Length: 105
Image (cartoon, rainbow, N blue to C red; front, side, top):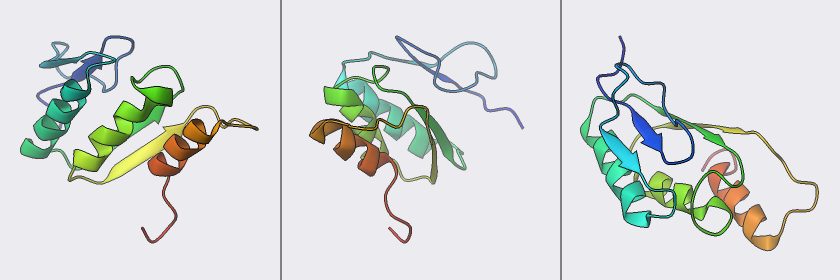
C-alpha cells in the first residue's frame, strides 16, 4: 500500500513519494528538521525506513544530521552506503559506523 506522505530534503528526494506532494521539507543543515522528520515517521504507520547515504547529501559534519534522525527514530532502518571511502577521516568513519552498527546492536 503506498504511503500517504513523503519526505524530501533540499538536495535530494529521500523517500519515494506516494502521492507526489511532500508533507515535510527538510533543510539540509537544519538539525531541528531531522528531529521533526523522525517524529513524523514515528507517529505514522511506517514499518521501516530506508536511508540511502552519500557523503554531501545530509547536513552536519560529514552528514552527521542523518545520524541524529536515526537516533530519534523508533522504527527499523535499512541503509545503503553508496560510497565506502578507502581512507575516511575520523568524522567520516564515525558517521559510517553510526549508520551501520555491528550485528547484534
